[in-house]
Length: 140
Image (cartoon, rainbow, N blue to C red; front, side, top):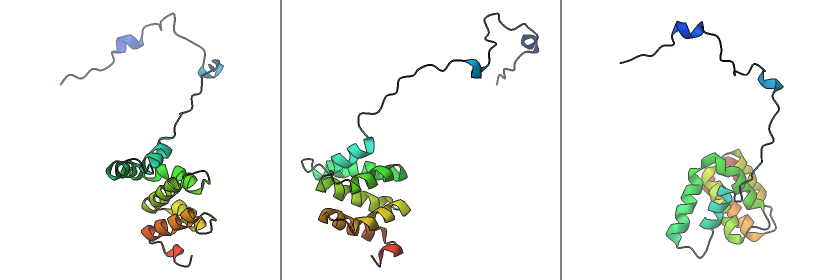
């Protein structure tokens, strides 16, 4: 085994002439372009899992990928579940995902969904809460 250690001889040499001597706080911050992702990957997984034109096995594969994201998927799933513009299929998939993901955020979102005007939201909330088996949902 060969171990390479810095030589003391290099430490005694003069620094290169082109070495920058100004500190980082004196540097001008470059204008960097900001790019936003055209698609939210979690929202896309929900949309694919909710697509009625896909075979059930393909939709289930997308749903499994969504659940595999764990807590990372929770904010978007909650947002889709509460979104009045989401399709019934998307709202249902989001509710089921919240039921699989669990946690306080999922429970609170689903409990709020029980009071929604939209029937699919209420049904999805019941389904998701049933999966969670959280004591807080018993009264609701």
